[in-house]
Picture 1 (cartoon, rainbow, N blue to C red):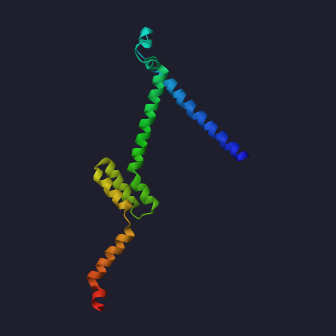
Picture 2: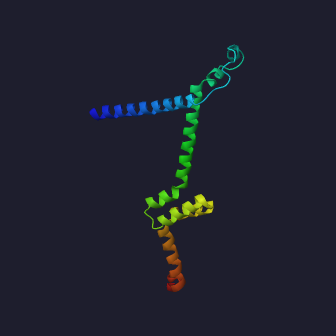
Picture 3: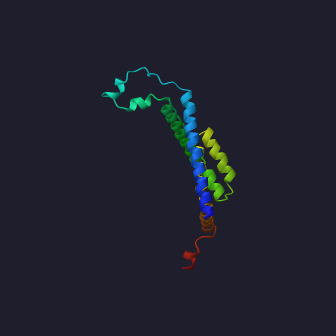
Length: 152
């Protein structure tokens, strides 16, 4: 019961900190901005035009929109970076001997040409034990010939 209460308290504190940070950033950006058009008459907002125009003339609302836009852009850039690093994470997860090569090719793909990144993904996701077994079998058959055809 105490653990449940502590986790609920932690969740509430985190939520309050996140919402408070969001609102304080929105307020800070609202103080840095000016919405032009404040001198428009009140009839402009109450007649055939939508009521959202009154909200769009609020500095605080524009600050909130700016913070939301920055958050979305940051999150999308983070997801693109995670996609770019998928080969490195995969080779580290598999404890591959080619982890350094995959990292170097991934950086070359970022700065030089995207073909290097594709090569890094191919190297990271290839089952090298199966490739080695198949190549070894081909070499063995090439050197010794097929044993099934000789026995028959």
